[in-house]
Length: 489
Image 1 (cartoon, rainbow, N blue to C red):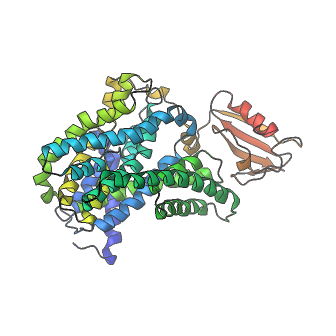
Image 2 (image 1 turned 30 degrees about the vertical axis):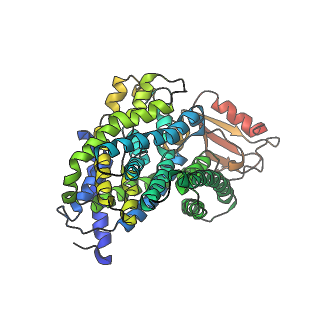
Image 3 (image 1 turned 90 degrees about the horizontal axis):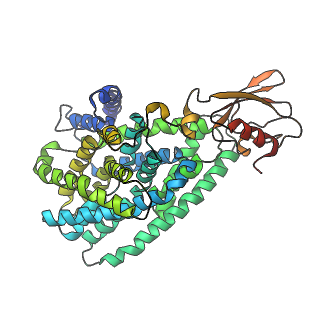
């Protein structure tokens, strides 16, 4: 079946519906949802029962890049700086040195066991060197794992921030494969420029985006998420246009915005949470359609061999060496090693050799596919089991919610108190977004002149207002009182 304008919406919506319904029951059988999405795409493809002919790596790459924008941006918005700050150095080490060591060790193994050249081997190692943000975010959250000692923020920070490193390594070694007269030193300036401009662009566009979101006055609340989507794509494309790493830029931009007071922040977070899930489904379905199972079978043996080496040797080497200078229990290091999920991102990166037309492109793509599937299947289904074995799991009732969890919950707060705005309050004539309100508190309602108002970030407080405040955690209500009376000083 060929995809046409007339049937693409029908086929696409049916695949989405099947994916959502199937994902509802997948965990009863221990199957990660994302792997199920991929399987549905394969079944719908030309080698499956659906018979849909899709063989366009360029379109698949475009869909992948757009999807990764949403997935990384949503993950960044959910990153709480207060929980990330204590483990920032560990996360950066894992997402840079850890990725490099994984790529080099796996590339060396591939060079040893195959007929790939050293640069082709390093290209394959680079493509699968990063953990997959979509896989880690979705599996950790859908399994609702409660982990000890800042493990969860460490894993989410690593998975959200290490794709840029893998992307740069992929481009660097692809350049060396295509231009065999160049040496390794020739790609170092590109690497440094990509990372530097990506970091600067992320902070710059994050600050600019905050000013635009809070200062522009839109007539409809629903337009604010649309505004943020536009700012997200501008951040990615503008950074990429000047030679920076767009993936790094949008992640840093999102982390910055997620920890600022924004107008209609709750609406923005909920919208991006839903869009991230949609993009994960679309991405895995698309990659499933792109795969031809009949063409993969010759690569099954080498694919599984490389995958096992990655899981058992290359990933642990990358983690243990990059964390060697940090104080951390060994069982935590082993668990971080195990949560080295590879998902859709490596498959997206594997389309770059296809489009470049290098000799080993098809072999690389099929091997990468096997690595991603086996990683999600083996590691994704055993995260809870390994957490218990290594004694890094908390009882479910002991799990702490972060600020984003609280903001998204329908009834998140445990305490309620009413505050009255007096003439001497700092908050008089201030918009809520300007107050620097405690993260674990929200103004649920404002009583003004006998009427009840539902506030948002742009609501200006007036003398005589009565605020119904919901808060979670000890001392939060005291912090609210101090904020209203004396500001942040």
